[in-house]
Image (tube, rainbow, N blue to C red; front, side, top):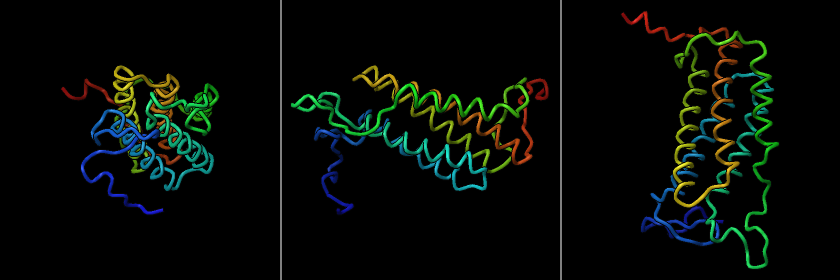
Length: 191
């Protein structure tokens, strides 16, 4: 399979189903940002972090590929003429979202309760988590906009919302594991 097809040289690309759209179409922005998020999660996974977190991040990367495929599918062509779904891949389900919730609960166990907002930073790996969290929120915003325009599977929005929570807690957990300083935002100190 060749990497270059030359079909996008004029600024358009094909969705699953064959529909051609401009490369700046909201659907392309949404799944492109999911791809960016997946790359940042790979960067976090490549850090010196516990194996349990690496395994969870690998599962999340697989989920994000599924989510990207869902977003890359033209809703008008999602069902084939024979009534079957175009995408013959695992779905994002309530169990997929529950996986994130269970991981959040597990990681929060050793952490002190939050009493203040936390500033990103303290360790490079922690900062990567916060960058991924911000990209996740952008992906969520784009997917919400796409949902308003064309409709998006509700589990996509739920998953992205929960994933940003997961990434925040992962940042706190890695701060704890790495014995880095968790910097609280205390407005009074600005005076």
